[in-house]
Image (cartoon, rainbow, N blue to C red):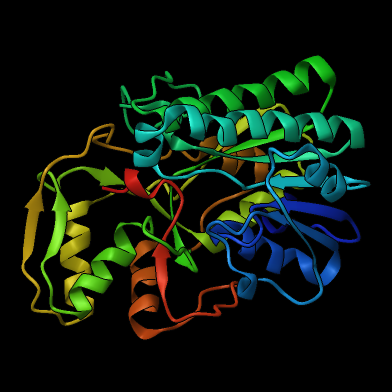
Length: 332
């Protein structure tokens, strides 16, 4: 039986969503806005104003700017920290610069939260695990990241734990597996959106490596539910996997998308990417038992909804596209 956290809600609170105009952040904002005083801090490097409801307070700025952060966080009860550079390839190309956003910026968020006595729900990543020793991957698995992105997420994941232990700051880290859903934009839109775009144009569907690598794709509406549960749980100072517990190979994903779009696209293979992991899949036992969270959208449903232009669950789709999101370069 699911616990009360399974349908957790946050209401009558003052909340800040960093990166709130982006992919996951905007869906979180949309869920929170009807019953809370919501603020968004975003530099709009990848986010979009059109993703935001009219009744939220928007502060345009960088999380590394202490003045902007202080203004956005003043008097808040909860900070949902979504802002990050999520591209593995960008962190490989520019480790120092991306570390400034992903690590230094996050520490500033934790410090500001201490000033406000606010809970922090942190967007972490399955990238912290690197090549798993066994599948599915539990939160107690070894952490040996294969990219600067994974190192950066592991660092802030551990900072979340330490801030809870050293400073009594309530923190929860959510280790997202491969997110997908509406609104992810830009050159790092992810493998699902890329495959759909290629299939609909009858262009070759390009698969990295042999395509036998596997991923656990989790819909953004489920990620929102996990964030709400993390904002209300008593179990702080810990990390939770956010995935479905199911895996699919990238080659099978390409074949499925070709079928649902009735495409004649050939599937072609390109070089394996540096820093890419072979297999990834979540053990969701901890999240199920402690947060009362379990994914509700299976991949087949999500892909069919994309093909039909239908929205899923509580997510009010403002676009016709369902894109892959967090850690897009891990998705093949």
